[in-house]
Picture 1 (tube, rainbow, N blue to C red):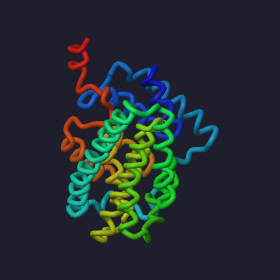
Picture 2 (cartoon, helix red, strand yellow; picture 1 turned 45 degrees about the vertical axis):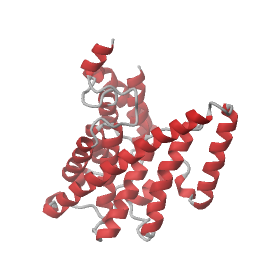
Picture 3 (cartoon, rainbow, N blue to C red; picture 1 turned 180 degrees about the vertical axis):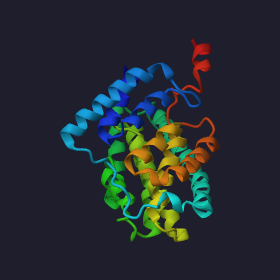
Length: 277
C-alpha cells in the first residue's frame, strides 16, 4: 500500500503515470526491482493520473524546454557531454548524501545536551539566514526548476548558481535533520538542474536546457538509486528528444555512486531482505 500510494501521488503531481509505476518498482532496492507491486501500482498510478488530469489539466509540472534538441541531431558531442555530466552528477550526489549524513550526526550530538525544541529553533535560524541571502533555496523549488528547464535563469552568474547548488544541499539537510519535514526528490531535481546550468555556462553548450535535463536525471538516478524512474521522468515531462543522452548520463552517475543513497532503509536487493529476515 505504501508503494501504491507513492506511485499514485507521484503520478498525480507530475502527470507522469509510467514514472510513478517505475518509482514504486525501483525505490525499495538499490540494485533490484519489486516486481510483485507492478499490477497494483499500475492501477493506482493510472487512476491518480486520470483524476489529476481531469481536474487540473494535462500539462506536466515541468514545461518542455524552449529549444529542445531534435532526436536526429544527437551526435558524439552530446553523448560526451552526457558522460561528463554523469560523472559530475555522481560527485554532487555523493556530496548531497554525505551532507545529509553529516548534519544528522551533528544533530545527534546536539541532542545529548539540548532539547528538541531548541534544536528545531536553531535549524529555523540557520534556514532564515540562508533564505535571507538566497531565497530561491527555500521551499519546494518548483518555480526555480521551471525557470531552469525553460532557461530563464540563463542570465544568472555562475557564482550565484554555485551558491544556489551548495545552499540548497545545506538547506535541505538542515530541514530534514533539525525537525522539519520535506522530501528529497524535488531537491535532487533542483540540485541537478543547477549543476546542468553551471556546466552549460562554463562550456557554452547550446541549448543549455539539454544540460539541465541530463544533470537532473543523473543526480536523481544516483542519489535515489532509481535509474529507470529518472529516464522515464524526462521522457514523460520534458519530451522524447533527450532520452538517449539521458540514459547515458543517468547510467554513468547511477553506477559510479555504488551503493550510496539518500535512504538508509533501502536494501541492495531482494536477497538482502531475505537474509535479514
